[in-house]
Image 1 (cartoon, rainbow, N blue to C red):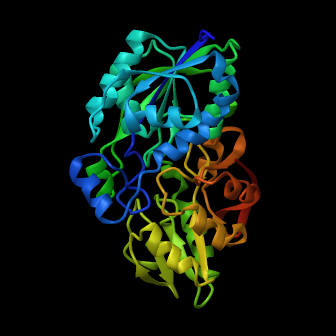
Image 2 (cartoon, rainbow, N blue to C red):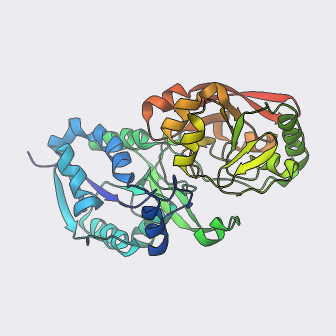
Image 3 (cartoon, rainbow, N blue to C red):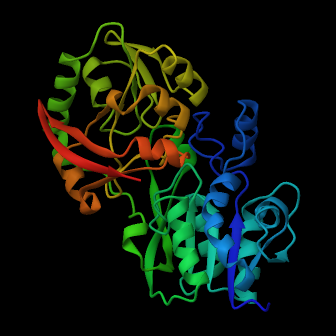
Length: 373
C-alpha cells in the first residue's frame, strides 16, 4: 500500500548517557569517553521505541524517513515500520550527523520530524530546519529545558499517531535553549536562547521551557531549610537533588554540595558528593534513604530532567512515601496548571509515583499538588 503520511525520525544514540553517571550531559568526545568509562549505556533508542510503538497500528499507511543504523533505521526495522534511509551516518555519530540528517529529511519532506535527544540535539535540529519545519522532541537527553519536547515519550507517540491518522493539527512556535555544559558542570547555569521551532499545538502533551531565578524566595527557602533540618531523622540517608532550591538544606548545614548533582547527607553531615546512579542505588538498598527534590520551575518535573541519577529502580526502592518535595511559592505559581510530572524511564514506576504530594513551601507550610505521568 502506498504511504499516505510521511514522518521523519532522528535518534541521537548517545543522548542521556551522561546523566546517571553524574556528568550532566554528553556533549563532546571527552565527556562521552568519560561516560563510557563510568559504565554508561545508550538509552535514547529505548525511549524512542516507547514513542514509536504508538505508530505500529498505522504502519500500512506510513513511511518514516530517517538516518541509517542507530540514528533511526535500526529501530524502524525492529518495529516493522516502513522506512527510507535518507542519510548514511558513520559508526560514531556526532552533532554534524544530526544536522545533516535533519537537512536531508527536510529536503525530502515529512509531516513531522520526531527526534530523540536533549537540548543539544534540539539545537542541532533547529540549525538544520529553522522555524518553518514541524518537529517534536522525544525527551531522551540530560538537559531538557527547551519547549519543543513532549512531556514523555508516550506523549510524543500519541501526537505522532494523530498525525499518522491524518488528524489535522495546528502548529505553534516554541523556544529552543541550551546550556553551556562546561559551565554547568562547574555549578554555573548559563543558558542561551538559540531560536524557535514549529511543534504541534498540543499543550497538554508538551513541556514548557524551564524558568528559574526566583530570587524573592530566599526567605521561603530559609524557612524550608530550617524545617527540614529540624526534622532530619537520625541514621537516615538523604539524597539532596539538584538545583538551588533543593540545596537550601546544604547551605543551611554549611556542607559542600554539587549544585547540579545529587549529594548524600546523614546526621547533618555530608557523606558523599555528586553521586552516580549506581552509588545512589547502593544507598537505596539500605532501606534508609529519603529523597529531597524540587520541581523544575516552569515545567513541574520532579524526575527525568537533569537528575537521571534518580532512576526507576532507585525510585521504586525508595517509594513515594520517602520523597520530600520542596519549592518556594513563586516556583509553584510558574508551573502550568499546578501539575507535577515524572519521566523516570519506566512507565510502570512513573504511574506508581502519581498522586498528590504535600510540597513544603515554608517553615511547616505545605501546598498539595497533583503529580501526573
